Length: 488
Ligand code: C2O
Ligand code: CU
Image 1 (tube, rainbow, N blue to C red):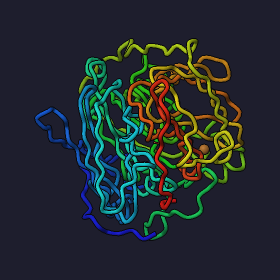
Image 2: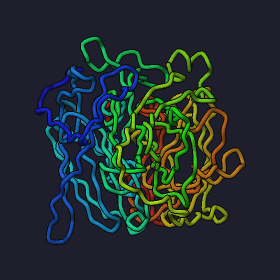
Image 3: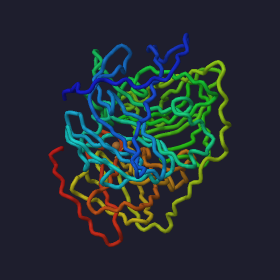
Image 4: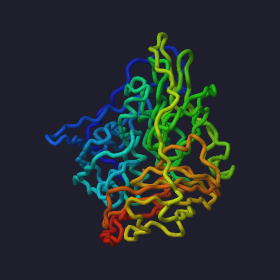
């Protein structure tokens, strides 16, 4: 598993300023939070916006003063933030400068299956892949990451991940902080482990994957954020392999959840904790004037679905300082929090065309492991389905579906709490709990290329806790391609 130093390290832009004389999290030497740059695009005569991404190896200063071999898009680690509007046509040219095959998946995006970047859209080393679609979904914080069959954890852990922000009229109009990098802050949270010389430690994954003892935000450990406004909006992605975060502030201050995976909630939800399993996003708004606000990962009341012993052994119950928000002395005013944010039309499960059930257990879904050559089922386009998802295991899992944003109908028969009542593409499924989801499949039928559903704990996904579905026209016959399995 050699790292190649193919690309020169491109430093990612740092946010300006650093308040002196304030304490740093956990005794680290604190550096300002890096803000991933916005990706640039060229617009062609037809109005399509063209982006280019190159996956490559480099080295990064994740730990202050140490150099770590990492992988990144258009740089040494993570990738630029892509931003596009609903209704816009986007096109991506992706070059693979890595020493092995990869893919680029648009997590949370409604995109034709052949452009989805799942395990069927492999890009060989030195090869190029093109992906294009018209953005057609509510404004949201989505992300992109590799999805090569069996090695997703390694590729993401080494640094390949970036945000994909979708804007629309609703997100434009809503009175929330929205100046990127100023009061609208992307925050990619990951956990990593290092050997003494600063190399990423990929040894000894636990049964829930590579669990790190160092929290890395936007690519560095020990970050702080100088805040120049009264309130700040954090677009938080859990980009970790297997770690679940129970996020809150050290002083238990209240914040408001304004968006989940697929976009704005109906109204801001006041909380003191929000839990994110791998792949999930939360947009929160927090007031920071006055004193420092320390965002922290706190112990889980339910031990994150593990038994006590495993939770202790894996360090899942440890608390970690994630990001210190440092207010300025004369903050700029922020808009008052709106009473309502977006209209979320409920999907109607009563007319569901099909009900399906999914049992999650030990690297399998419904007793089967992922088979690239097996289509598990095929929803019909323009129908609503109800999926019952149950973790029948003693291990934590979550459940992610490509192509659609879904709604949680109920959890063990009760309506979801407000924080889980918006659009979701990934849901944490603790042991023993039953979730019913409503999903509506629209456009993009394809008899050949499937979409994935899987546990987003990346080790579990790599171990085969994944299945595939085709979206078909009524009466259409599946015609999947036989896959060359040489990448397994
Ligand atoms: Cu975030 Cu199937 O992936
Ligand atoms: Cu799992």
